[in-house]
Length: 361
Ligand code: ADP
Image (tube, rainbow, N blue to C red; front, side, top):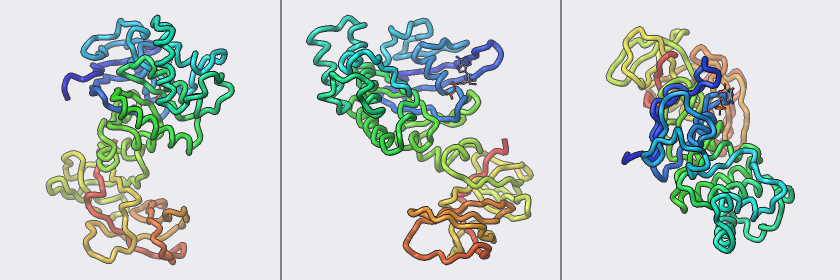
């Protein structure tokens, strides 16, 4: 990376002087990047975003913006656009007045302000609604106003904290697409907070996965999904079958794991394991084959169907396998009848590359 646009250097935050809610955070964000902070509630995402915005101060460490330390710079002098979940619009002001607000506090008024407000409203598809008040608009429209307000002073960096969480699924997907389009068109850097992994996968250039105030893994979406670094990331991003066992043989990065019920399976290890190590193994439901015809699968295990749920695009099977009572397999709907009764005996197979051998913690 060239000089990062944003840099967190060993940043920590405690609200009460005892417990750290952000721990030893070092993170570089490139200019023009769409970076998402993803994690469960309470993992430190908003605190991290608020320290970058300047509404919270770091307990230790330093944050740099465009090469300059900003810990002592007030939020209004950082020139960062913000969009919140709650829209935070002024109810007594019209749409145009709301969007123009950041310009008026910067001393930009009159025709110069008017043309920028109209351009920002055009970008978010709200032309013609400039005289409405927020209460006369839908949630989706109000959030578009908030996005226009964040963009109107042409900041290079825009922070978004769960901006779409209050909207229903269809609207959320539409606005995800529009925010992504604006990001591409304007070349701005966006730091985005969400607890929704699907949203993070759909929108981000890179995702930083937070858990208990620490980044567990930071990577592009495909790597996070295909190669989770630890059991937390494997469970948090997508669905996974997690099995515990002991490493019984190692050959390069492939190893055999003996599960508690004696089943031996083959997987690829994230780190270099040693025979005898306790380990967790994770296998994605969509990578498991049912009654595989070829012998090409690196692992084959016997299983019993517990139940099948028909979900339209795919079927979700719950099985007894590998000592688990709820081993999940998803099968795409290819139009054929699965013709499987609950209680049927089947075989499951998968390739070693789809079976990740993780650290046990
Ligand atoms: P997230 O955005 O991932 O949900 P937060 O950064 O909001 O996480 O919170 C991290 C932790 O810090 C939580 O335990 C939360 O209760 C605590 N916390 C957040 N804001 C404050 C505050 N203003 N005062 C005290 N504790 C806070």
